[in-house]
Amino acid sequence: MITDPTALFDQVAAATHQARKALRKAAHEWGAQLDTGPLPPWLRDRCADLLAALAARRVRCCAHLAPAPRVAHAALWRPGLLLCSACVGLLAADPVEDATCDRCRRHVRRILPGTVALGPILLAYGLCQPCAAETDPA
Image 1 (tube, helix red, strand yellow):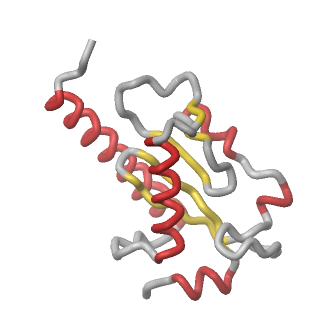
Image 2 (cartoon, helix red, strand yellow):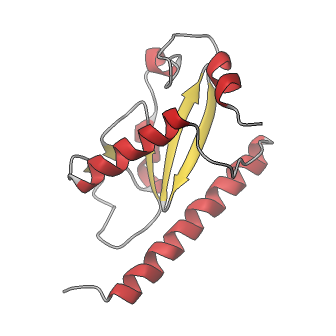
């Protein structure tokens, strides 16, 4: 059965709204500011990598992600994996990766978390202090 394009568009819009709502809620809970400006080039490139992998069907998805659009989660430290909200815990980084900057790959004591919404996909990443300061558009 083929989904009507209008219905599919509505489903994508609803899932995107839910993803952004989750991002706003997380920012509020963490006392963080949401940046609505353009993405830094390095992050834009990683987002493009994820979308290209999705288009090429090189991404493993949890069994809960059905063909209908819904909020999904990915992480730069776990490329090629897309999970539903119930399975998001499987994206947890191992101790070494948890101390590695997703931009420069340096091992540091403190990683600053970030998330970007790509439509209905929430893509998580972590940066060291120098990379966060360098890429912060403010």
